[in-house]
Amino acid sequence: MAALDVLCDLNVIEQSLVPVRPSQVNRSRGGGVQGQESAFMWWRSSFSTTALTQAEDALFQSVMARIGVSSDGFLCHDLFRPRPVLAVAPLTQPTATLTAIAARTVSISGGQVGLVLSPGDYIELRDAAGGRVLNTVSDSVTIDAGGVADVALDFPLNTARFVVGDVVNFERASCVMKRVQPAGRNYQTTSVTCSFEAEEVA
Image 1 (cartoon, helix red, strand yellow):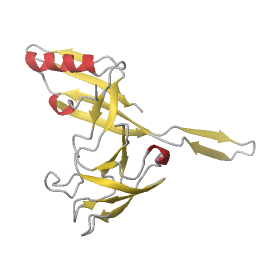
Image 2: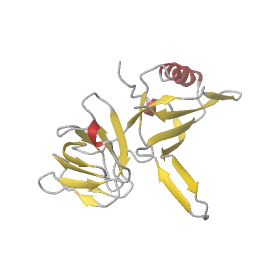
Image 3: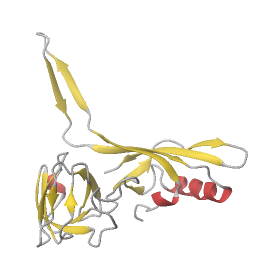
């Protein structure tokens, strides 16, 4: 089985999507402070729905049963920003091909000509095993007339995970998450609202 693509079916009205990169702070005897961040980061998200009808609640509960910790998870993207902020419509060429990779830079070819990537835009890398890594763009760049660009990233990548030829995606850029808490339910007279939390899995 593969991760479910169900997020847009859940009537989500509120979402948080935050990067997690643990750090350790050490204080020396002289009072100085030194900090060290972990090498790589992951994503954490929380969701709340609109008021659901009985049919919508039934679908929600069915999805919750299929995205728990023992499942293959679900694809999570930013519902508010599903594509680069300067793209006014769904991308005609949402994916590109990885041609080179460094810790905080990826080079691509075959991208949508003229697409402008802005700081904070999401970028997804897919490895050969079908895994997905979500990152964000750190510097503005425009994909040139040959479909080529060098894209600087906010967070370091595990470069050993990817090879030339892997897919890079800019539309609904996602990572795979699993639900980590039982779904909350708030009953009203004629409807119910629900919420849940999830974290990225490797």
